[in-house]
Each structure stands twice: as C-alpha cells, then as structure tokens.
Image (cartoon, rainbow, N blue to C red; front, side, top):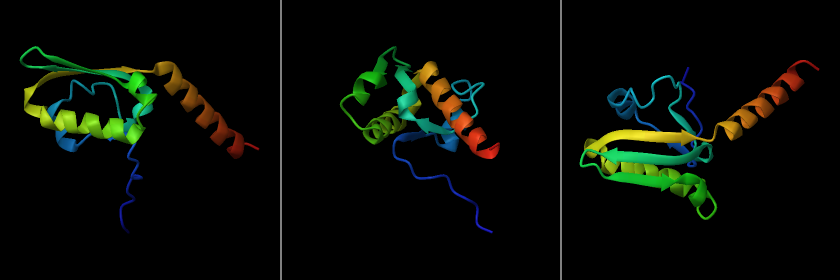
Amino acid sequence: MPKKLPPKNKSWISLTKGFVKGWPEVLEGLSFTNMPVKYLIYVDILLKNHITIHYDIQKELAVKPQSRIASFLKNTIEKNYFKIKTIDLKFNIPLLKKDIESKTSSILGKTFK
C-alpha cells in the first residue's frame, strides 16, 4: 500500500530532513516539520559574521501571500545554510492556540453528537 503523502500546501514552511538533523537545537521541544507561515510573527537568522536577517512575517502577511513568504524563507535558509549560526522563531501563540481549540472542538462536536 502506498504511503500517504502530506498535502502540497505552498503556504507552509517545509523543513528538510537535513535541516532538522543539522539544526536539532532550533527545533528542540517541537514535533513538526512544517506549519503555516501565518503562525510566525518574525524570523531572525543570525549569520556567523554577526549579521542578522530579520523578517517580519506579520507585516509581510498584509501585502504578500503566504506561499510567497514561505518560498522566500526557504530560499534564504537554503542560500545561507552554511553561514547560519542561529535561527530565532517568534510564534503567534494566541492565534495558534485559538485555531487548535476551534479545530478540536469542531472535531469533538462531530464525534460526540
């Protein structure tokens, strides 16, 4: 039986296995390999030469589609992969919590009618 593949959603950041293996401390305590860009507030990429690339996701979401933002992040990380010292991700926890609760209550509401 063929393995079920995840949906091809261009508005999600997909982290390659090499990235996850090479940067375990970035994803420490997190158990995902992709997520919608809308849950990020900003991304700070600190390069080894002490230059910081700051990308304000919330500001960009107002003028660009999620797929374009995800593509830019992926390309930036791949382009600077060997120059990266650290990556800081700031998540929009209230939005993430709200969406998880609404999806969970919707599923539970259908299950326990």
